[in-house]
Image 1 (cartoon, rainbow, N blue to C red):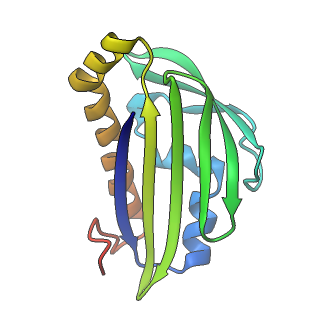
Image 2: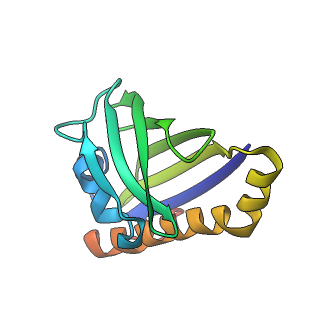
Length: 157
């Protein structure tokens, strides 16, 4: 299993940060246009446990792929979890954590994932999957810095 761990400091109130990140409609704002991310169904309204969201993404060579996730856990103002039900990964478990800190909010993402195809999946991870995921989260961080000026990768603020 692989894991990606990111942390960012956002100089805003916890309710403001939570409202933005727990809204499925905002996913397209923080996803690189090159990913071709479009919500097909289930992204309306406020997030809740059991919510199923279907997307189209273009993760490799612009080829569209359906990705379905379920919001499995929501602890208001603290964390939520999305898990893949259909998509490119053998397993995808994405934890989004929010913690009030002096001057703002510390956001932490923990993505645990497995790739299909055994050895070939592991090879793909080394060649491009890991870099692509890091790029996706780096893009998101840069967008967050524009939406919430003063945000920084230094979550120790």
